[in-house]
Image (cartoon, rainbow, N blue to C red; front, side):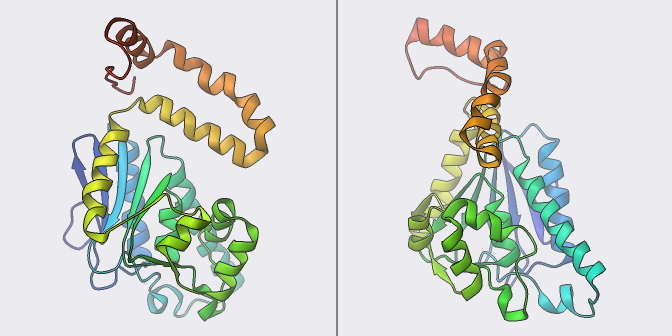
Length: 264
């Protein structure tokens, strides 16, 4: 587990749920070491037996975004800019490629790279006080880490343009209205209810959840026709899973809703 006192990311386990904790006070700013620690923790999750992942942060904000002084000071030339952008995209895609259900729990400010990491999770729950922004315009940039297109994916292109071009801060209720996040909770309930939901996901048929993630991605990449064409190859093999066989037997002998799953 990633637990170095100097690491901005702490990886914990709560039963079958892996918990990535961003903890770099006072503002949980992202720099090269944050990206490296996030990558290491995510890789540990991918190679573990965790059946769901929660991404959360300590402190009064989720993150105030990228540490501009550390990340961009002295950076020049299109080659270096291209490298940074390619690295940002790789990080987000790696988050999305995790085969287990993933949930981000956001409170306070959630800006730039941290928001992009949250957008890489399957679902986002937010505290009522949360505020979201891709504010790279203040330094003359467009987001490097895939935030533009993922905002467009969730909220639609017109709203994504507004969100990024204005560099504004948008509240949790607006993000819920736009379809960017899944749920808004009182701040004091976010962690408890979020972790409870994480455990519910982990206790479910996680290989079926992985198939659901692949089908959603097939739809997003190619539309209904592409997703339909993918169903036989993605969903069909689930028939041979132990989870399905055991759940069918449980359904027939005990009734619906009594089955337990092992992700096999």
